[in-house]
Image (cartoon, rainbow, N blue to C red; front, side, top):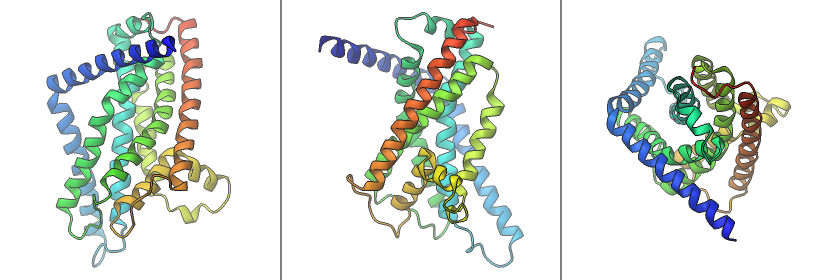
Length: 273
């Protein structure tokens, strides 16, 4: 019992340190965070403007709600993942990664605390971005009447997203400069979020789509954010399967990260380069 209390206390200390680190980062580089949100906001507006110029008549055939939720979710995934793999790449260059690797806490534990400490900022950015689109675009059927459900879905989705981030972080330990590769993958997630599920059928692709945490999060967010749908209950079966899938993917991601970390230590890749 005492060992468990000690582990929890140690993790809370790491979480506090990472939280202070994130606050210092936001205070020191506020323009980077603000410009990222503004830049992401302008991109989709430009896409809508382009469609309006290319289509004849109006744009009612577009599912703007699905496009916006999927796009904002892609931003959520990208910013969360870059907080792991991107920072590992930076710390590899400055030598601070080596300090983390020889500390009393495992590297996986530090990354998890980093992800948890950054989660409030990522959730606020997601909600702020959707709110900006709601204000800018007329007749957008997206609402925040199920605000608690939105936060709950994002938190469950984050568990699975951490599994993805562990895999990306492990590959970064081995190959160092992989930023553009991961950015391409992050934009590929946008295609998944915009994918019409009915066209995948009941084959292997449909099964993977139905049980991948990020696509499950996308479909659940649509249900709780689009106005005509109702609130999601705490004991909803879909929410339960979503949670189990996210935990399973988190475990798989952590396992692969631990194996890749072992290889990185074996080849001496955690030092400055």
